[in-house]
Image 1: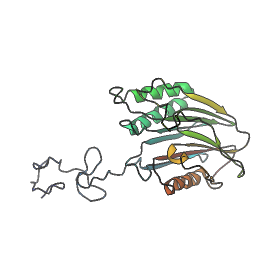
Image 2 (image 1 turned 180 degrees about the vertical axis):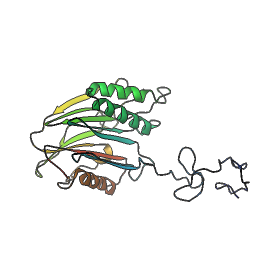
Image 3 (image 1 turned 90 degrees about the horizontal axis):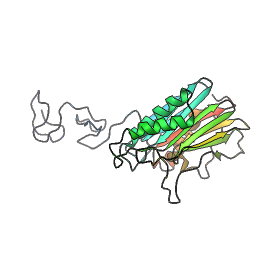
Image 4 (image 1 turned 135 degrees about the horizontal axis):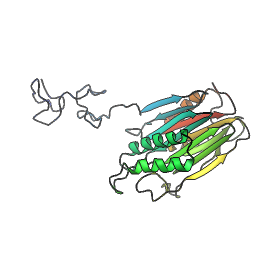
Length: 277
């Protein structure tokens, strides 16, 4: 027998390689087949990060609302997170984008989405949900110099009304049902001219304010909530006008990937005033 990393001889029953220290009996790599995947999910032989359930995920709920999240083509992992659920006659969605310059950004987005969506589903307001999510993300930090962070947008969609709360540059758009009507951006980025964000959740966020807006559509259409992995490619883009929300979200994802897929991509689509399916 030999070590799958350094190929030094090992004996049956050994728990680690005496030559390189590799733990024997590790999970097998999806690429090279070596039993060499470490606790962080990377193969110690070929370096591949192993696929996870967050690399690509899809959600569909009753009524047709759908969400898709994907790690894109250039990132080693998906630091976006999304929730999509029903609460009585309302639909709740939360999308968070981990700040790439912060540590464990994927953990920040995941805990923010889980905390805020549960709070909104319980009937708490946008401000309360945001504060709870902020505390949850802050608890991940060991110090302000080691502070996981994420942007944030949450929507509660009720018959005839959309309530939004956001901090950062994760966006929401209204897509009218008529093909000749342009999309309307419902949020405003917390960012300076160079593109650097000025609002986020995290221990170093300096009490970033939550922006809240209520939108009352005058016609049927779709609410689009998305991370910058999609919206950076929307200039001149003709949104799909047919299909289920899942079909449309998949088409938008393909557009982002075909345009370069530089970042993680998350898309949530919620129909309002019209049945899609």
